[in-house]
Structures are given as structure tokens and as C-alpha cells.
Image (cartoon, rainbow, N blue to C red; front, side, top):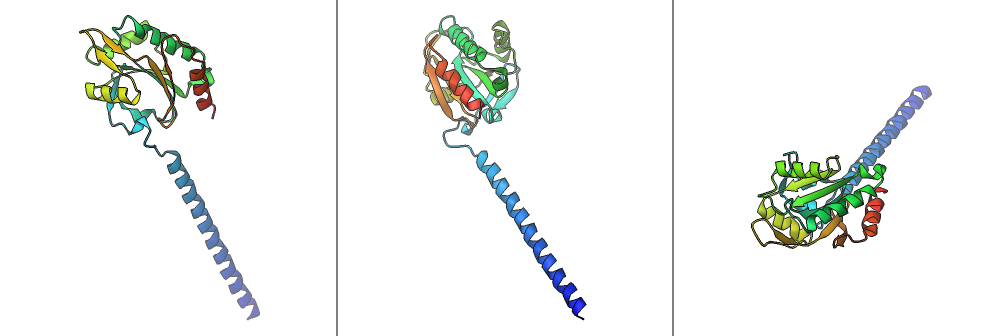
Amino acid sequence: MKYIINVVVLFILFTSCSGDMGNKNQESTTSSEVEDVETNVISDLSIYNLPSKWTTQNNQEIELNSLQGDVLVMVMIYTSCKAACPRLVADMRNIDVQIPEKNKKNVKFILVSIDPKTDTPERLKAFSIENKMEEDQWLFLRGDEESTREFAAVLAVNYKRISPLDFTHSNIISVFNQKGELEHQQEGLGVDNKETVETILALTSK
């Protein structure tokens, strides 16, 4: 009889321990899932809240939130520009060459057109080839007029059509973190981009 009682006690103890372990594992999994959700939370300051859709130089339609997880270096230009835009393109390329390859895999250099009527996907593709911006890190985007205006406002870029082919516009390069939040801006043409490069390196070294 004593032997049977001992066996029953051991069985109860084992069942109780197993139940506790199961609960602990469940709690651990739940905490991990909550952590993942918190990591992917988009703040009110993120450009990934914008619902706009864009077409790339490869004629693919994307939403901005598909870029989440990359550091974005962004500028607004138009391909028929003969004055400021070529210099902005040169500034973007100058920033690009200062980023090591190990960091560059998590960076996208994005040029957004302020002239979507002229800058068709075909024109953007030709422009990317002309300027040797064909690697994966280069992305050209065009949207409709409303989306372009909305996005320009987010970047604090002002632009205005002054003739059928020309615009006046701000000369700003912006850096966004992996969650789409603005981290840094440089304004002007041919300016010292040391802080811009340092910002990109800091974000891609975390």
C-alpha cells in the first residue's frame, strides 16, 4: 500500500511540474511575440503611414511601407532639369560612394520625380542608365500629382512649375531610419555631406 501511495504522489508531483513548465514556455512565447509587435510598430511620424502608391523605373507598383527595414536616402528631382537636379544627383552619388558595401545592403537611394507627367517609368529607367544608377540600391519613383505634393510636404520640399518644362524646387536630401522616421536633412548643392554619411553609417551599424 505504501508503495502505491508513493507512486501516486510522484505522479501528481510530475504532472504539476510539467504543467508549470508548459505555462512558462507559453508565457515566454507570448512575451516574444509582443516584443516583435512592438519592434514593428510605426510611429505617427513615419512616412509609412502614407497610403500612396508609386511606380518604379522598372514599371513596378509599390507602396512606401514595402521599404520598411531599410535606411532611405531621398531626394526630389525631375529628369528634364538642367540646373540643380544634375548637382543633386551628383550629391547622391557622392554619398553612395562613401558608404561601405557591408552597410549599403540596408540602404536605398531614392529619387522621387516632381514631374510625373514627363517622368514615365521608361524615362526614369533611361535616366538611371544615363547616370549609372542601375544597382539594386537605386530606386526611382513617380506617383500622381496629389501623392507627389503630399510627399513633398513631408520632406519640406517646395516646388512650382514655372514653364511647361521647368520647375523651381528646394534642394534637400533626407535620411529616414528603418521605421520611416526622418533622421537628418542636408540642404543646398555641393554641400559638405559628412553629417549625412555619418547618420547613414550610424543607422546601418546598429
